[in-house]
Length: 132
Image (cartoon, one colour):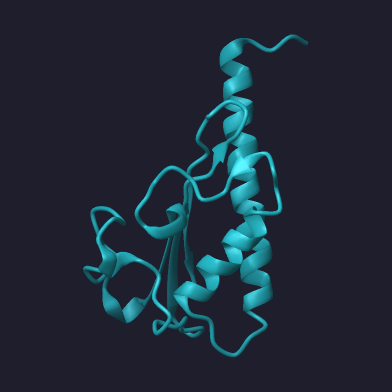
């Protein structure tokens, strides 16, 4: 089967997003074995994992935040505070912090990464919310 140009582009976007998603899965799995996990811990571990794939620019196109990665922790008690309900991730107060740790009982994690496929320049933005 011959793919159209559009189908090829969509396939590249999907594979770039898959790299981000699978890297997050590995990073979060590793970190959840630790007692405490900060936003910066998850961001750094996720970036390290994405850096293993040489087909992408893991630091992405959306900068700031540093490395094109957003990681925000909160709880269901925060009722989506301003920090978790931000318009964008460019202001410094929304960047991953070392002193904000995951609440494993009623935590919320919001993550976003903006990897770019090196050969084509196609972006593969990936984001999700995880509830504990």
